Image (cartoon, rainbow, N blue to C red):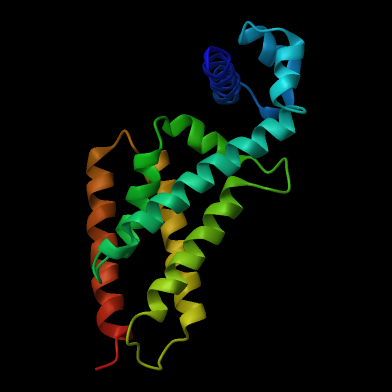
Amino acid sequence: MTSDIRVKKTRRNIIYTFLDLLCKIPFKKITVAKIYTEAEIAKSTFYDHFNDKYDLLEQIIQSRSTAFATEIERKFTKFNDETILESLTTIFLSLSQNSTELKALLELHETPLTLEAELRRITLETCKNYLQQQALNDQFSIDFLAHFYSELSLTSIRFALNNAANPVWIQQQTEIMTMLQRDLHTKVLAN
């Protein structure tokens, strides 16, 4: 049991070290040597956990995406007609402890799997499932609306990450998302 705890701590240390480096320097300048040196571990210890920095990045993306999807699934039943757009943004931001690291991860396109693509896929599926449960009029297709909601959510996430230090703008963002949601709700529900 002791070794299992140490293994988990070492893995977390590698991940946190990598994310810390990612917030300071471009991904291309991060080397495995830099990671294990900063993490104060042996080279072989790094390779016990990850194949290379790309494997490390993909595992982080998978972990963040899974956490986002799990939280959406958990809260999905609590969504109401006025809160789905705001909820997707709030869920994602509540899972983040460091907006700088999330911005860095969202901007990376170094591997086939990207956080941006995963969030797009998850929000699209969530929106589509939500809309399929609603009584909609025939004015807009569910696919169009799901893409629209998804892209609006991703834009909202990026805005919140980039402007977290400005509470007035975040409040305005919340207000406009609520307003858009209510407007969309009245236009797309069957009467």
